Length: 373
Ligand SMILES: CC(C)(COP(=O)(O)OP(=O)(O)OC[C@H]1O[C@@H](n2cnc3c(N)ncnc32)[C@H](O)[C@@H]1OP(=O)(O)O)[C@@H](O)C(=O)NCCC(=O)NCCS
Image (tube, rainbow, N blue to C red; front, side):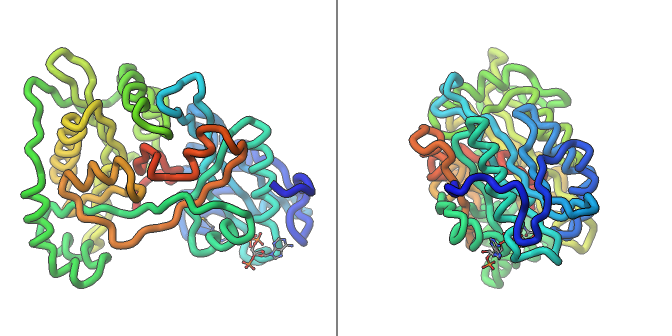
Protein backbone atom coordinates (compact mmCIF):
# COMPACT_ATOMS: atom_id res chain seq x y z
CA UNK A 1 0.00 0.00 0.00
CA UNK A 2 1.33 3.50 -0.74
CA UNK A 3 2.77 5.15 2.36
CA UNK A 4 1.22 8.50 1.45
CA UNK A 5 -2.18 7.22 2.58
CA UNK A 6 -5.47 6.82 0.81
CA UNK A 7 -6.42 9.57 -1.65
CA UNK A 8 -9.78 11.27 -1.29
CA UNK A 9 -9.82 12.66 -4.81
CA UNK A 10 -9.07 10.69 -7.95
CA UNK A 11 -6.38 11.40 -10.53
CA UNK A 12 -5.13 14.64 -12.00
CA UNK A 13 -8.75 15.57 -12.66
CA UNK A 14 -9.33 15.64 -8.88
CA UNK A 15 -12.64 13.80 -9.13
CA UNK A 16 -14.56 13.24 -5.92
CA UNK A 17 -14.27 9.64 -4.63
CA UNK A 18 -16.97 8.01 -2.56
CA UNK A 19 -18.16 4.46 -1.90
CA UNK A 20 -21.03 3.72 -4.24
CA UNK A 21 -24.43 2.58 -2.98
CA UNK A 22 -27.23 0.47 -4.44
CA UNK A 23 -28.70 3.68 -5.89
CA UNK A 24 -25.56 4.13 -8.04
CA UNK A 25 -25.90 0.80 -9.88
CA UNK A 26 -27.81 2.34 -12.81
CA UNK A 27 -24.99 4.83 -13.50
CA UNK A 28 -22.35 2.15 -12.94
CA UNK A 29 -24.26 -0.15 -15.30
CA UNK A 30 -24.24 2.48 -18.05
CA UNK A 31 -20.48 3.03 -17.64
CA UNK A 32 -20.00 -0.76 -17.61
CA UNK A 33 -21.88 -1.10 -20.91
CA UNK A 34 -19.83 1.72 -22.42
CA UNK A 35 -16.43 0.42 -21.22
CA UNK A 36 -17.00 -3.30 -21.90
CA UNK A 37 -19.31 -3.17 -24.92
CA UNK A 38 -22.15 -4.84 -23.03
CA UNK A 39 -25.87 -4.18 -22.67
CA UNK A 40 -26.72 -5.86 -19.37
CA UNK A 41 -24.88 -3.72 -16.81
CA UNK A 42 -28.07 -2.39 -15.19
CA UNK A 43 -29.37 -5.90 -14.42
CA UNK A 44 -26.06 -7.60 -13.59
CA UNK A 45 -24.40 -5.08 -11.26
CA UNK A 46 -27.15 -4.99 -8.55
CA UNK A 47 -27.03 -8.82 -8.44
CA UNK A 48 -23.23 -8.86 -8.41
CA UNK A 49 -22.53 -6.02 -5.95
CA UNK A 50 -25.48 -6.20 -3.56
CA UNK A 51 -26.90 -9.72 -3.70
CA UNK A 52 -24.01 -12.00 -2.72
CA UNK A 53 -24.53 -13.66 0.69
CA UNK A 54 -20.79 -13.27 1.34
CA UNK A 55 -21.16 -9.49 1.53
CA UNK A 56 -21.58 -6.29 -0.43
CA UNK A 57 -18.87 -5.31 -2.89
CA UNK A 58 -16.44 -2.53 -2.08
CA UNK A 59 -17.09 -0.34 -5.08
CA UNK A 60 -15.62 3.17 -4.92
CA UNK A 61 -16.74 5.54 -7.66
CA UNK A 62 -15.30 8.81 -8.98
CA UNK A 63 -17.64 11.67 -9.72
CA UNK A 64 -17.40 14.90 -11.69
CA UNK A 65 -18.42 18.34 -10.39
CA UNK A 66 -21.93 17.78 -11.66
CA UNK A 67 -22.20 14.48 -9.72
CA UNK A 68 -21.88 12.36 -12.86
CA UNK A 69 -20.29 8.96 -12.21
CA UNK A 70 -17.14 8.83 -14.39
CA UNK A 71 -15.15 5.89 -13.06
CA UNK A 72 -15.70 2.89 -10.82
CA UNK A 73 -13.83 -0.06 -9.32
CA UNK A 74 -15.19 -3.18 -7.62
CA UNK A 75 -13.76 -5.65 -5.12
CA UNK A 76 -16.17 -8.56 -4.69
CA UNK A 77 -16.09 -10.52 -1.43
CA UNK A 78 -15.93 -14.30 -1.30
CA UNK A 79 -15.74 -16.33 1.92
CA UNK A 80 -12.73 -18.60 1.51
CA UNK A 81 -11.67 -21.45 3.80
CA UNK A 82 -8.08 -22.56 4.39
CA UNK A 83 -7.95 -26.38 4.73
CA UNK A 84 -11.57 -26.45 5.88
CA UNK A 85 -10.90 -24.25 8.88
CA UNK A 86 -14.16 -22.36 9.19
CA UNK A 87 -12.85 -20.45 12.20
CA UNK A 88 -10.05 -19.07 10.02
CA UNK A 89 -12.38 -18.34 7.11
CA UNK A 90 -11.77 -14.97 5.59
CA UNK A 91 -13.10 -12.82 2.87
CA UNK A 92 -10.91 -12.64 -0.21
CA UNK A 93 -11.60 -9.91 -2.76
CA UNK A 94 -11.80 -10.38 -6.48
CA UNK A 95 -11.24 -7.10 -8.26
CA UNK A 96 -13.24 -6.44 -11.38
CA UNK A 97 -15.31 -3.95 -13.37
CA UNK A 98 -12.45 -1.46 -13.31
CA UNK A 99 -13.62 1.27 -15.64
CA UNK A 100 -12.78 4.87 -16.37
CA UNK A 101 -14.75 6.99 -18.78
CA UNK A 102 -12.70 7.13 -22.04
CA UNK A 103 -12.02 10.90 -21.92
CA UNK A 104 -10.45 10.62 -18.43
CA UNK A 105 -8.05 7.74 -19.01
CA UNK A 106 -4.29 7.84 -18.28
CA UNK A 107 -4.75 10.50 -15.60
CA UNK A 108 -4.46 8.25 -12.57
CA UNK A 109 -8.19 7.86 -11.82
CA UNK A 110 -8.19 4.05 -11.79
CA UNK A 111 -4.94 4.04 -9.77
CA UNK A 112 -6.49 6.16 -7.02
CA UNK A 113 -9.74 4.16 -6.95
CA UNK A 114 -7.64 1.02 -6.65
CA UNK A 115 -5.87 2.23 -3.52
CA UNK A 116 -9.15 3.39 -1.98
CA UNK A 117 -10.64 -0.09 -2.55
CA UNK A 118 -7.54 -1.87 -1.20
CA UNK A 119 -7.45 0.40 1.86
CA UNK A 120 -11.09 -0.37 2.62
CA UNK A 121 -10.56 -4.13 2.09
CA UNK A 122 -7.54 -4.09 4.40
CA UNK A 123 -9.42 -2.19 7.09
CA UNK A 124 -12.19 -4.83 6.92
CA UNK A 125 -9.55 -7.51 7.59
CA UNK A 126 -9.65 -9.12 4.16
CA UNK A 127 -6.23 -10.82 3.77
CA UNK A 128 -5.77 -10.59 -0.03
CA UNK A 129 -7.18 -9.59 -3.39
CA UNK A 130 -6.90 -11.26 -6.75
CA UNK A 131 -8.06 -10.57 -10.27
CA UNK A 132 -7.93 -11.37 -13.96
CA UNK A 133 -6.40 -8.30 -15.60
CA UNK A 134 -6.96 -7.77 -19.33
CA UNK A 135 -4.82 -6.11 -21.99
CA UNK A 136 -5.86 -2.65 -20.76
CA UNK A 137 -5.31 -3.17 -17.05
CA UNK A 138 -2.57 -5.86 -16.88
CA UNK A 139 0.47 -3.58 -17.16
CA UNK A 140 -1.01 -1.19 -14.60
CA UNK A 141 -1.71 -3.93 -12.03
CA UNK A 142 1.64 -5.71 -12.45
CA UNK A 143 4.03 -2.85 -13.29
CA UNK A 144 2.58 0.10 -11.38
CA UNK A 145 0.48 -1.31 -8.54
CA UNK A 146 2.91 -4.06 -7.43
CA UNK A 147 0.53 -6.94 -8.06
CA UNK A 148 2.10 -10.39 -8.15
CA UNK A 149 1.81 -13.08 -10.81
CA UNK A 150 -0.21 -15.78 -9.03
CA UNK A 151 -0.83 -18.24 -11.87
CA UNK A 152 -2.56 -18.81 -15.18
CA UNK A 153 -6.07 -19.76 -16.18
CA UNK A 154 -6.99 -21.54 -19.41
CA UNK A 155 -9.97 -23.08 -21.23
CA UNK A 156 -10.23 -26.88 -21.43
CA UNK A 157 -12.49 -28.28 -24.14
CA UNK A 158 -14.40 -31.51 -24.56
CA UNK A 159 -15.57 -32.20 -28.11
CA UNK A 160 -18.97 -33.90 -28.03
CA UNK A 161 -19.77 -33.82 -31.74
CA UNK A 162 -18.07 -33.51 -35.12
CA UNK A 163 -20.63 -31.04 -36.49
CA UNK A 164 -19.78 -27.79 -38.30
CA UNK A 165 -20.54 -25.91 -35.06
CA UNK A 166 -17.96 -28.04 -33.21
CA UNK A 167 -15.40 -27.32 -35.93
CA UNK A 168 -16.15 -23.59 -35.76
CA UNK A 169 -15.63 -23.58 -31.98
CA UNK A 170 -12.42 -25.62 -32.31
CA UNK A 171 -11.22 -23.10 -34.91
CA UNK A 172 -10.77 -20.66 -32.00
CA UNK A 173 -7.77 -22.88 -31.11
CA UNK A 174 -6.39 -22.71 -34.64
CA UNK A 175 -6.78 -24.54 -37.92
CA UNK A 176 -5.13 -27.70 -36.66
CA UNK A 177 -7.64 -27.96 -33.85
CA UNK A 178 -10.48 -27.41 -36.35
CA UNK A 179 -9.25 -30.19 -38.64
CA UNK A 180 -8.65 -32.42 -35.64
CA UNK A 181 -12.27 -32.16 -34.44
CA UNK A 182 -13.23 -35.79 -35.32
CA UNK A 183 -10.07 -37.06 -33.65
CA UNK A 184 -10.73 -34.94 -30.55
CA UNK A 185 -14.31 -36.22 -30.39
CA UNK A 186 -13.10 -39.80 -30.66
CA UNK A 187 -10.44 -39.23 -27.98
CA UNK A 188 -12.97 -37.66 -25.64
CA UNK A 189 -15.40 -40.50 -26.19
CA UNK A 190 -12.67 -43.07 -25.49
CA UNK A 191 -11.44 -41.28 -22.38
CA UNK A 192 -14.90 -40.80 -21.03
CA UNK A 193 -15.50 -43.22 -18.32
CA UNK A 194 -18.97 -44.54 -17.87
CA UNK A 195 -18.65 -43.46 -14.33
CA UNK A 196 -22.06 -44.23 -12.91
CA UNK A 197 -21.65 -45.38 -9.33
CA UNK A 198 -24.00 -48.19 -8.22
CA UNK A 199 -27.06 -47.17 -6.24
CA UNK A 200 -26.70 -43.45 -6.93
CA UNK A 201 -29.51 -41.09 -7.88
CA UNK A 202 -29.23 -37.91 -9.94
CA UNK A 203 -31.46 -34.94 -9.14
CA UNK A 204 -32.00 -31.57 -10.80
CA UNK A 205 -32.13 -28.83 -8.18
CA UNK A 206 -34.89 -26.22 -8.33
CA UNK A 207 -33.83 -25.28 -4.80
CA UNK A 208 -30.40 -25.96 -3.33
CA UNK A 209 -30.43 -28.51 -0.47
CA UNK A 210 -28.78 -27.51 2.81
CA UNK A 211 -26.49 -30.57 2.95
CA UNK A 212 -24.36 -29.02 0.19
CA UNK A 213 -22.62 -27.20 3.04
CA UNK A 214 -21.42 -30.52 4.50
CA UNK A 215 -20.08 -31.60 1.11
CA UNK A 216 -18.23 -28.30 0.76
CA UNK A 217 -16.80 -28.61 4.30
CA UNK A 218 -15.56 -32.10 3.47
CA UNK A 219 -13.78 -31.09 0.23
CA UNK A 220 -12.35 -27.89 1.74
CA UNK A 221 -10.14 -30.03 4.05
CA UNK A 222 -7.95 -30.90 1.05
CA UNK A 223 -7.31 -27.34 -0.17
CA UNK A 224 -5.48 -24.23 0.96
CA UNK A 225 -8.02 -22.00 -0.75
CA UNK A 226 -11.65 -22.82 -1.50
CA UNK A 227 -14.74 -20.62 -1.66
CA UNK A 228 -17.26 -21.99 0.82
CA UNK A 229 -20.40 -23.34 -0.82
CA UNK A 230 -23.75 -23.46 0.96
CA UNK A 231 -27.40 -23.19 -0.07
CA UNK A 232 -27.75 -19.37 0.08
CA UNK A 233 -24.49 -18.89 -1.85
CA UNK A 234 -25.26 -21.41 -4.64
CA UNK A 235 -28.83 -20.11 -4.92
CA UNK A 236 -27.56 -16.59 -5.48
CA UNK A 237 -24.68 -17.66 -7.73
CA UNK A 238 -26.61 -19.88 -10.11
CA UNK A 239 -30.38 -19.95 -9.63
CA UNK A 240 -30.82 -16.19 -9.08
CA UNK A 241 -28.29 -15.08 -11.71
CA UNK A 242 -29.97 -12.63 -14.13
CA UNK A 243 -28.92 -14.62 -17.24
CA UNK A 244 -30.93 -17.69 -16.08
CA UNK A 245 -28.60 -19.99 -18.00
CA UNK A 246 -27.46 -22.32 -15.23
CA UNK A 247 -28.72 -25.72 -14.11
CA UNK A 248 -27.67 -27.44 -10.90
CA UNK A 249 -27.53 -31.21 -10.63
CA UNK A 250 -26.84 -33.22 -7.46
CA UNK A 251 -25.82 -36.85 -6.99
CA UNK A 252 -26.72 -38.91 -3.91
CA UNK A 253 -25.43 -42.31 -2.84
CA UNK A 254 -27.62 -45.30 -1.97
CA UNK A 255 -28.03 -44.01 1.59
CA UNK A 256 -29.20 -40.60 0.34
CA UNK A 257 -26.01 -38.72 1.21
CA UNK A 258 -24.98 -35.96 -1.18
CA UNK A 259 -21.70 -37.01 -2.83
CA UNK A 260 -21.40 -34.46 -5.66
CA UNK A 261 -23.03 -31.58 -7.49
CA UNK A 262 -22.31 -29.80 -10.73
CA UNK A 263 -23.45 -26.52 -12.28
CA UNK A 264 -23.72 -26.32 -16.04
CA UNK A 265 -24.19 -23.31 -18.28
CA UNK A 266 -26.46 -24.11 -21.18
CA UNK A 267 -25.47 -23.14 -24.72
CA UNK A 268 -27.24 -20.09 -26.10
CA UNK A 269 -27.18 -17.77 -29.06
CA UNK A 270 -28.52 -18.06 -32.54
CA UNK A 271 -27.34 -19.95 -35.57
CA UNK A 272 -24.87 -19.62 -37.23
CA UNK A 273 -23.13 -18.25 -34.12
CA UNK A 274 -21.08 -21.21 -32.83
CA UNK A 275 -21.62 -19.91 -29.29
CA UNK A 276 -25.06 -21.49 -29.51
CA UNK A 277 -23.36 -24.88 -29.40
CA UNK A 278 -20.85 -24.13 -26.64
CA UNK A 279 -21.74 -25.30 -23.15
CA UNK A 280 -19.77 -24.89 -19.91
CA UNK A 281 -19.21 -26.84 -16.73
CA UNK A 282 -18.99 -23.92 -14.36
CA UNK A 283 -18.80 -25.79 -11.08
CA UNK A 284 -18.27 -29.32 -9.82
CA UNK A 285 -17.63 -30.54 -6.30
CA UNK A 286 -17.32 -34.24 -5.50
CA UNK A 287 -16.59 -36.05 -2.24
CA UNK A 288 -13.93 -38.25 -3.88
CA UNK A 289 -12.49 -38.99 -7.38
CA UNK A 290 -15.29 -41.45 -8.18
CA UNK A 291 -17.99 -38.89 -7.36
CA UNK A 292 -16.11 -36.23 -9.36
CA UNK A 293 -15.88 -38.53 -12.40
CA UNK A 294 -19.59 -39.34 -12.23
CA UNK A 295 -20.53 -35.65 -11.87
CA UNK A 296 -18.36 -34.82 -14.89
CA UNK A 297 -20.19 -37.41 -16.96
CA UNK A 298 -23.59 -36.24 -15.70
CA UNK A 299 -22.65 -32.68 -16.74
CA UNK A 300 -21.56 -33.81 -20.23
CA UNK A 301 -24.78 -35.76 -20.75
CA UNK A 302 -26.90 -32.78 -19.62
CA UNK A 303 -24.99 -30.38 -21.89
CA UNK A 304 -25.25 -32.76 -24.87
CA UNK A 305 -29.02 -32.89 -24.31
CA UNK A 306 -29.07 -29.08 -24.16
CA UNK A 307 -27.51 -28.96 -27.63
CA UNK A 308 -23.79 -28.48 -26.88
CA UNK A 309 -21.29 -29.61 -29.50
CA UNK A 310 -18.31 -28.60 -27.37
CA UNK A 311 -18.10 -28.28 -23.57
CA UNK A 312 -15.64 -25.85 -22.01
CA UNK A 313 -14.36 -25.30 -18.48
CA UNK A 314 -11.65 -22.93 -17.27
CA UNK A 315 -9.06 -24.17 -14.79
CA UNK A 316 -5.98 -22.75 -13.12
CA UNK A 317 -2.77 -24.23 -14.50
CA UNK A 318 -1.49 -27.07 -12.31
CA UNK A 319 -4.71 -27.19 -10.28
CA UNK A 320 -6.89 -30.02 -9.02
CA UNK A 321 -9.76 -28.99 -11.31
CA UNK A 322 -7.42 -29.11 -14.32
CA UNK A 323 -6.44 -32.66 -13.39
CA UNK A 324 -10.10 -33.70 -13.06
CA UNK A 325 -10.77 -32.32 -16.55
CA UNK A 326 -7.70 -34.00 -18.02
CA UNK A 327 -8.66 -37.39 -16.57
CA UNK A 328 -12.16 -36.87 -17.97
CA UNK A 329 -10.94 -36.49 -21.56
CA UNK A 330 -10.89 -32.68 -21.91
CA UNK A 331 -8.38 -31.17 -24.37
CA UNK A 332 -5.62 -29.09 -22.81
CA UNK A 333 -5.84 -25.28 -23.15
CA UNK A 334 -3.79 -23.72 -25.90
CA UNK A 335 -3.49 -20.31 -24.33
CA UNK A 336 -3.53 -19.10 -20.75
CA UNK A 337 -4.40 -15.77 -19.17
CA UNK A 338 -2.44 -14.37 -16.31
CA UNK A 339 -3.92 -14.17 -12.81
CA UNK A 340 -2.79 -11.38 -10.49
CA UNK A 341 -2.90 -11.17 -6.70
CA UNK A 342 -2.11 -8.66 -3.97
CA UNK A 343 -1.52 -9.47 -0.28
CA UNK A 344 -3.29 -7.13 2.15
CA UNK A 345 -2.26 -8.98 5.31
CA UNK A 346 1.06 -10.66 4.39
CA UNK A 347 1.72 -13.76 6.48
CA UNK A 348 -1.96 -14.68 6.80
CA UNK A 349 -2.27 -18.29 5.52
CA UNK A 350 -4.93 -17.26 3.01
CA UNK A 351 -2.85 -14.31 1.81
CA UNK A 352 0.00 -16.73 1.07
CA UNK A 353 -2.34 -19.22 -0.61
CA UNK A 354 -3.89 -16.49 -2.74
CA UNK A 355 -0.44 -15.86 -4.29
CA UNK A 356 -0.37 -19.36 -5.89
CA UNK A 357 -3.45 -20.39 -7.85
CA UNK A 358 -2.30 -24.01 -8.22
CA UNK A 359 -3.17 -24.37 -4.51
CA UNK A 360 -6.78 -23.28 -5.08
CA UNK A 361 -9.93 -25.27 -5.57
CA UNK A 362 -11.30 -23.09 -8.33
CA UNK A 363 -14.01 -23.31 -10.98
CA UNK A 364 -15.66 -20.73 -13.25
CA UNK A 365 -18.37 -20.21 -10.66
CA UNK A 366 -15.75 -18.71 -8.35
CA UNK A 367 -15.18 -15.81 -10.75
CA UNK A 368 -17.05 -12.54 -10.42
CA UNK A 369 -18.24 -12.75 -14.04
CA UNK A 370 -21.85 -13.81 -14.17
CA UNK A 371 -21.30 -16.42 -16.84
CA UNK A 372 -18.37 -18.04 -18.63
CA UNK A 373 -17.32 -17.24 -22.21
C1 LIG B 1 -8.09 -0.11 -17.53
C2 LIG B 1 -8.64 1.26 -17.17
C3 LIG B 1 -9.66 1.10 -16.05
C4 LIG B 1 -7.49 2.14 -16.69
O1 LIG B 1 -8.05 3.35 -16.20
P1 LIG B 1 -7.21 4.71 -16.12
O2 LIG B 1 -8.00 5.63 -15.24
O3 LIG B 1 -6.85 5.17 -17.45
O4 LIG B 1 -5.88 4.22 -15.36
P2 LIG B 1 -4.74 5.15 -14.73
O5 LIG B 1 -4.81 6.51 -15.31
O6 LIG B 1 -4.77 5.03 -13.26
O7 LIG B 1 -3.47 4.41 -15.24
C5 LIG B 1 -3.27 4.35 -16.65
C6 LIG B 1 -1.93 4.93 -17.00
O8 LIG B 1 -1.85 6.31 -16.71
C7 LIG B 1 -0.66 6.57 -15.98
N1 LIG B 1 -0.90 7.81 -15.26
C8 LIG B 1 -1.01 8.98 -15.88
N2 LIG B 1 -1.19 9.95 -14.98
C9 LIG B 1 -1.20 9.41 -13.78
C10 LIG B 1 -1.36 9.92 -12.47
N3 LIG B 1 -1.52 11.21 -12.23
N4 LIG B 1 -1.34 9.04 -11.44
C11 LIG B 1 -1.17 7.71 -11.67
N5 LIG B 1 -1.04 7.20 -12.90
C12 LIG B 1 -1.04 8.02 -13.95
C13 LIG B 1 -0.49 5.29 -15.22
O9 LIG B 1 0.83 5.10 -14.77
C14 LIG B 1 -0.85 4.25 -16.26
O10 LIG B 1 0.23 3.95 -17.10
P3 LIG B 1 0.21 3.82 -18.69
O11 LIG B 1 0.16 5.20 -19.23
O12 LIG B 1 1.48 3.08 -19.02
O13 LIG B 1 -1.01 3.01 -19.09
C15 LIG B 1 -9.27 1.95 -18.41
O14 LIG B 1 -8.38 1.87 -19.49
C16 LIG B 1 -10.59 1.34 -18.85
O15 LIG B 1 -11.66 1.71 -18.34
N6 LIG B 1 -10.56 0.42 -19.82
C17 LIG B 1 -11.77 -0.21 -20.37
C18 LIG B 1 -12.36 -1.21 -19.38
C19 LIG B 1 -11.39 -2.34 -19.08
O16 LIG B 1 -10.98 -3.07 -19.97
N7 LIG B 1 -11.05 -2.50 -17.78
C20 LIG B 1 -10.14 -3.53 -17.33
C21 LIG B 1 -10.87 -4.75 -16.88
S1 LIG B 1 -9.78 -5.98 -16.21
